[in-house]
Length: 297
Length: 321
Image (cartoon, rainbow over all chains, first blue to last red; front, side):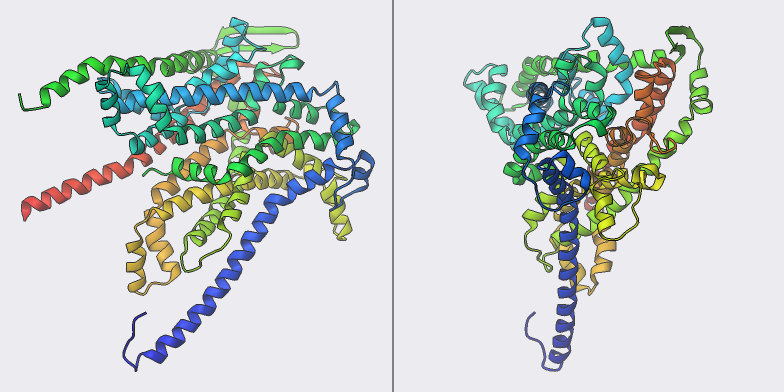
């Protein structure tokens, strides 16, 4: 607001105060809405923690906003439960999700690198093909997939959960976008001049450059695999190989009122909290990843 | 040989094979685990093939009969309708809230503090295991659960959420809303921040109010991202499974009002072992998602097309001048 003629000044001043009041009201509204939404997001997890720390009888008597003293006790009952092999489930989930994160980020980066760097006749076709299949959900082919795994006697194994993640179009797309902005071809050329073989260039020079993209996608693929319920439930039948989501479903389909409720809440907390803990440490990084991955520059 | 075109072409010939080699893992995995199963699924869709008690009926080729029967006998229409309803109930509040939040977060005059905290909190539910979240809601909202007892303490009528259609659908919509509004907010924020700030300044100089700026500057400029959000959410909605499956224990009750199409597919593969219907359902799902996927593809490419058009126009303008 630069100085104006004296005649205009009072008018301008009045407008300014009115705008200021409006702005203040808007700010109050914005904070109220944000606080309400945050409350809604946190409330259910707070209840989860509260109930995970109370014993069965207390939970049945009703709602309480304060935690109880049975956290350790519930933990012990859950860990010693034979019906729900929680440690086993956790280990299985970790193993599957870890492998998925590794394979899908590495091979998606490799695929993106092929299309980013090399000029070959089918390059455009391959790129468009991957973009086109990006949106087709895995559920449409799952019937044939499970039958095929039956034929191969691959059911009750982690292979069908891990190997398909080599082809992850969405991860590929993210990597391709990242390379477009962060990987100049001159670097590849320089490596060639220094006599580096192509595959070595990718492993030793390109991967370190795209590390931020690898990390973001490793987190996302890990989490989505950790949370995946549909395919594992169709593939895994043996108790020892069940992942956490299958155990949760099992909890739901059993006559759950007979269960120790403290144990039920503890089980839910155990499947949710590791991801939340990691998220809280890396939230800035993850949120930036969401923003970058979704919008085409 | 000062012209550098020839060495460049020579280079592309010698390295091109690496492009193909590096693409092998992706396409091999995609063929084995997606294309072949997809073909097999489609193949099943033309057979009568199911288990009745201990007996397996078929496989007998029946042409397209499964596609007719899945609507007439299996009530697919109802389940498609359920899925659409459940998606809309979550999506409409989600897009409205996300748009408002994104505008507020990016409003420099409003200058909200604690953005990092709020963004962290609202995005958090997105990372949560949907099945565990659903189990949590089931435990909290069941008859005699903590929410009902809290309502009693507040002297409200107890409400049996899971015996009422509105209650169950409402809970599913609430979960979907909570899980996705943070994500959508961040995406829309990124889109709004990508707008040239000169445009907002120009609008301000022209004396527009916030409302006009929102409808005539912000919305048109983030339209590609908005439609991208809409379509991807729609595809996600079609895949809705974990939340209603766990909440209703796979039966979609009350009165099958919360049975989604993927829950139906899951039933065909597990309980009833009806591969004919399951195949037909997969084909239908494939067609719908392919159309939506093509739309996304189109949306993602609009920018480039427009850029090219602009370039062409400016070049033509150059000629005219």
